[in-house]
Image 1 (cartoon, rainbow, N blue to C red):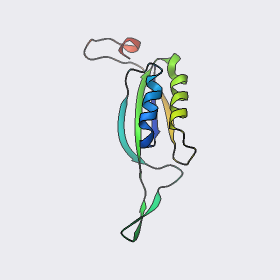
Image 2 (image 1 turned 90 degrees about the vertical axis):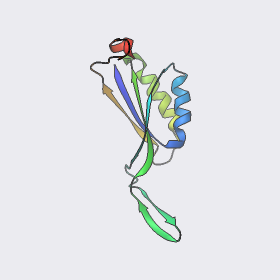
Image 3 (image 1 turned 120 degrees about the horizontal axis):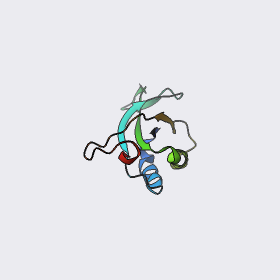
Image 4 (image 1 turned 135 degrees about the horizontal axis):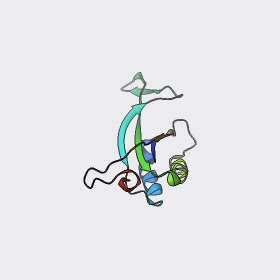
Length: 112
């Protein structure tokens, strides 16, 4: 089992959700986050004054998956989130040691 964590541009969320839903992904967790990578933020103009925006708005998706579906999910996220511009995001994959569905007590793959 794996946890796929993807940081993407906010306006790409619907495209990514549709892409992974087409693969049969039943659920995900979405969080609004802020951060920066190599682009180091940017400068904006507001009421004639320039100011530095160090943390850019992003969306973080978390999807728990069985091992055999991970590569297809990653591929779908990459394709749907791609703009070709800096700040498209990153995907991280973590091992999940144990998963429990609280309501039913199901564990591991059955809980996903």
